Image (cartoon, rainbow, N blue to C red; front, top):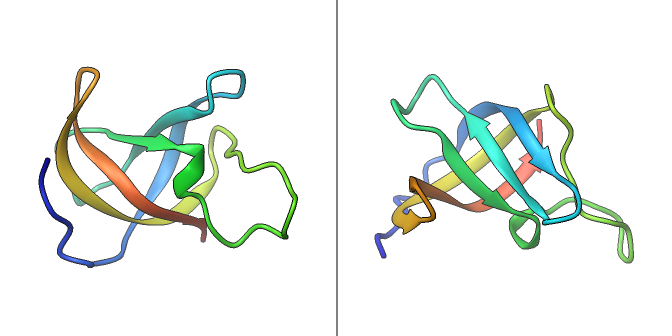
Length: 80
């Protein structure tokens, strides 16, 4: 598992699997797509369902990690 430098990046949701609670974000800052789990989504009202939608613009921080076939994993995500 890698570490995050804390830098906030901007990206767009490429896919989101509601039933599985994860998806993929693409960002011009990275050559590879970023794996996102619903538990990393912030900024939703308490008790609200955490999810993203295809095409949403987001801000995120990432770490280098082996997650499924992905090499980057979000550690913090919110709608931009």
